[in-house]
Length: 173
Length: 222
Image (cartoon, rainbow over all chains, first blue to last red; front, side, top):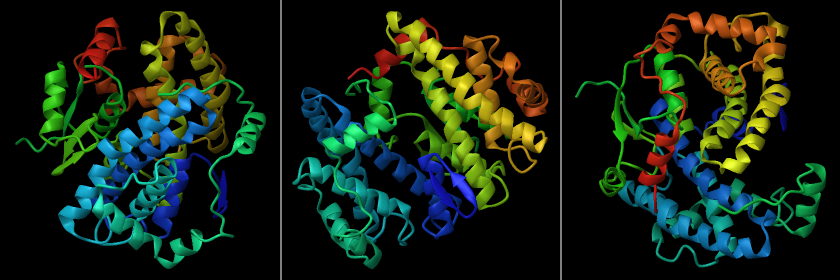
């Protein structure tokens, strides 16, 4: 839940869309918006596989790790690699920094936490990662002491289960 | 090239139905291509039509759009069903996302194992009655207007009427404690474009049956 501009906003996608539009990270017109929405949809699906990861049994975790890497390297990363290669620009959409770039960097870093060399074979994404990581606001967020949260640990899992009363086991995909 | 949007999906509701609803509500005619075999689907992927190797696919305005939400946001934006400003957009997005969580339960229902169906049906009824419908009942009661957001017909209204009808197919008396939603349902059903969509012969698809489930499993088999 995010309280901003007099609203109590819920629904992650609604909140992110609002922030992106408010801070000019949503492209310059409807078609750029559409591209950003499509790209974010993809990275969102990829991060969805990672979101449930901490709540899986140890055995399912290994299977899921393999699935995450497989999806990243065969379905999602190739798309963004090609987009960047085809237009040769620094950013995914409209030669301008947007929500799509932020979301992709987040996804890359999350997948790397599961397999550190996952970007081998994706030179465009390696360059993209370096470039976007050095944008001052993002660089600051990646430094210790920022509001970025660490990888979920057992304590986090226990807290989620307790607060959300989520004691059932999540099944892997 | 007709210039009409072209939808590619199975001949059934699934994730494409909300898109059909929105286009129909906006008065936009569209063409449909139905996936019936794995070979068709594999060919679409091989030919580079599907950005993430998935459908729905909507070809519109020179774009090959995938990702259901992206497609619907584009249609809503293009046809003025997305509110008048950022805050109305935010409300519409919140409402649509909430309803979409409920629709997701209905989407997966036909694919649940037979021994889980009764429990899943109960979950759908519980969520609709305790979590989602009360929200919209309250919204409508508080502002007393015909439409959910900004006193104007929007994507949120289309999504809600679709959800109400979908839940009613499973739980016929689900609106019994929701007088505002009953009125809303009647009003929306009488909007000319929606009324037309609700008549036989429209692009609206019937509820998923065994044949649909079988086709889905066949087309998307790994």
